[in-house]
Image 1 (cartoon, rainbow, N blue to C red):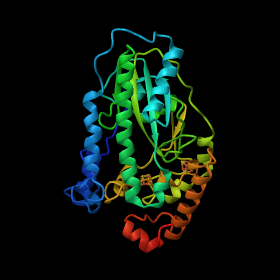
Image 2: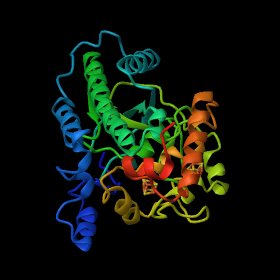
Image 3: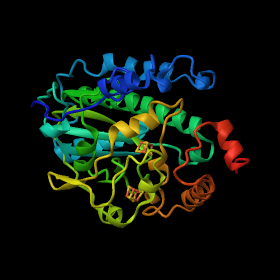
Image 4: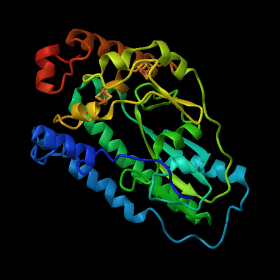
Length: 325
Ligand code: SF4
Ligand code: SF4
């Protein structure tokens, strides 16, 4: 099956990122600069090397014996349990379709398994660098878990290929949505009932016969019609209004203004994660008292800073917002 989804890597080699750099007269993209001020505290290049290192083990020898048989219910239960044991926060399964694969890549297998790892929401109260570090470390976890889960499935006697940030053949949102991991929000990220959009994904493409999940609809798209929180907090105004959307395969998609987002998220020294952090689905569905407390504190800080005003640097954040709570 050949992929049909256009994709954008968003890294320093992305043509759009390079074009913005040219327009701004930059020789390097600030977020990926080797000498950026934060590097002493967190080197994102070292982190990226760790997820890239998993790529060589994404596929391998398949056991000729199917020791656990080929009953879909049994295999699904084993594989989901293994994913959770390896450290996934949730695991979902869907039939693979061309829209889940990026143009230029193809797979013969029938199923795609999503493994997601939740980020620690409390990091939002520690500033931009703490959030960035958490996001990158969680991406490494996704690479590890998907790689180890693929190896486990090959051991069960079925082909299995891992996909993650170090490979990037899979289009995450449609695979996650079809695998029951949640609904697409106006900020362009998938919203999970437990973790909001505060998670990162990895995938395994396999021919093991499995029982698929159904898409999980719990009212997100309806909420986004009236909620403007991410729109009003996005520093460059990259998130569109409620009535500015397209529909793909029955799913409403608010298209984020990607060049505007890149200017704010790649052309600063820090990673931007604001739309994910201010989304009320961090607590709206799970009603976790700790998450509610973090959300309220964060929103008080953002109100003080003027909502759209980013607290980009930890130093600035302290100057603008006062001592951290
Ligand atoms: S990542 Fe930042 S700049 Fe990009 S859409 Fe979200 S809030 Fe806006
Ligand atoms: S902040 Fe509001 S509008 Fe934005 S994705 Fe979340 S629920 Fe939807």
